View 1 (spheres, rainbow, N blue to C red):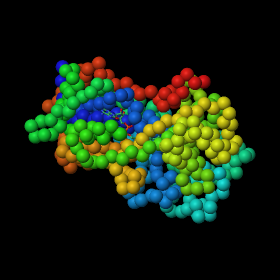
View 2: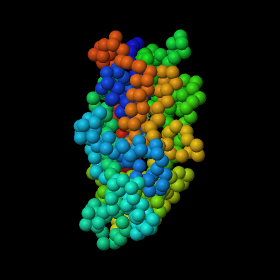
View 3: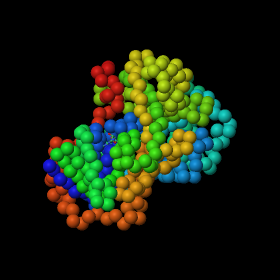
View 4: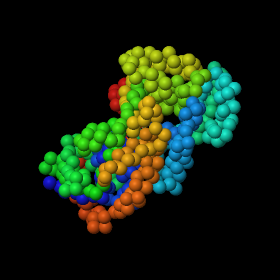
Length: 402
Ligand SMILES: Cc1cc2nc3c(=O)[nH]c(=O)nc-3n(C[C@H](O)[C@H](O)[C@H](O)COP(=O)(O)OP(=O)(O)OC[C@H]3O[C@@H](n4cnc5c(N)ncnc54)[C@H](O)[C@@H]3O)c2cc1C
């Protein structure tokens, strides 16, 4: 039996667990990250990689005061990408420096004046046609294009960047594990059959949708979780142009949010969310694809969608429960004893989540245990449970499709 002792065990290696693990080890806490599957393989590698600053919520008038957390995120990430933030993400692959907002028709005067208003605060700029990105430079295009101050990143490269430095302190536990409690009833550790036992003073649940069953296992009935399902659409084709845009039609809610990613065979893959994915939740894959084949040519009539392969992907967003299943505005951390339950609620909000956890550590005066010999623990990490990165969605969706 390998026995390990850590300051903190983080369970779940999506963006929340990866960002936390990186930061906590940098701060001197010996932190072990556990996942039952590959790193990033939950919502994180299913996300579009948009570093949201809240512009799309401003548009639909849903921006609230607490949403200032999200509006600070693009600059925060930018500093990391310039190696000046709390984590060095200078090697991160950026797919597009900006997300765009695309309207097929001239917008209503109400919306146009809204874009020029203080609420938007220089974060959305209308472009004149000579400044359009290549994908929008068509004579058939007579709508309006706005540039948002939000980058789109390659999430697979993000997982690689975050997991590189402390990879040795990450373990993949495909088998069942059991929690252990101490005499005071606090969680003290976990055990994998007679192979591995890990003890720690703090435990973070950052398992996305998996937090629900972890809470049940720990007999905790709070906090409650909500799921908001999506049925995303994927299109793969050699001639697809690189588009990073919320296509809003003439409404305020994106009909389709398109980001472009790359399959290992070099083909671009459009990953399509927005209203199509929200309203297509109960649709059969073929029906949703048929709907996309009708909607997209209306939004982007100059794009050739012949010779495109299609796929769909169903996935739930997992978040702390809100009234009326609304979208939460900020990251979430709630501590119950020495168990900390975390949901970032957006990829972009990972730094906000870590800020909240650091406040929790400071308030509870939780310091790194000076008795831990970090080098010795590193050497004891069992190679049998070494963590690997999960496969990209583009590969999973189009195995052998050319
Ligand atoms: C289709 C889609 C598109 C999105 N696009 C964007 C976007 O463009 N921008 C943005 O900011 N946000 C986006 N989001 C939201 C964002 O992806 C999520 O908020 C974020 O990835 C959640 O991260 P997480 O770490 O909480 O969970 P996850 O990424 O789901 O990770 C949870 C991890 O926990 C592991 N796990 C589960 N149960 C257990 C267990 N019992 N023991 C051990 N490990 C376990 C899983 O294997 C997984 O690796 C999108 C979400 C979806 C679904």
